[in-house]
Length: 282
Picture: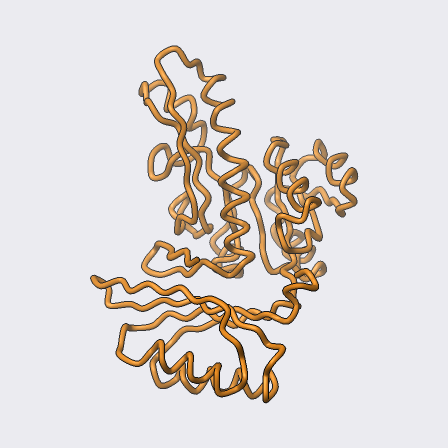
């Protein structure tokens, strides 16, 4: 994070909805001297679930971070909360996996250089050598690997202390065992408005169906192909005059924007996953 946000922290919680949740969390933070800057919450009435994101200032703490965590853990225990606390001084470490398409990789690295993505991009991994010059241009370590050598990929990720993986048009299917190691920490861009046209070659299939909208979907990866919780989506209009190449061109513009937005929300600890979908809190 930047120096301006190093003294901030973000608390994400989810639990069955009950009276007193908001007050208990606010009182706990206040009791330790934390200054709440903003908070957003959502209640899923049908599921009976409560979600909240609280961002607060640590500079006025009257205790320490260990005591604060212990107090939050006590409240979480009473209410059956799942919770995650992100400290502002701990930047997330991101690895980007790509194949041969370069548009999403370029876009992410440009946004990162411009300061739009608050993280450290620590590695670019690919099953081809084609995009090594792009990584070199931005000073990011690049490693080529065989698509099926997931042990080598995992070793590289662990060596770089990666906590978030971005599939920027990585045209390979990851095994269930690999995905299980990274729950809600692999962000993928799919070149379709899911759940339509799951899998390969969606633009051609969209053309064959004569669709009037094409889209892009960023989602967390699960062991079911293109079925993970959706983080962000966008669409653009198309007509009978558009060729497959036209749809690809329109779609790639969306892919860049949607992937960057989804990653930004993930980095800002705005996304909570439940029941196969997400809540994105402000």
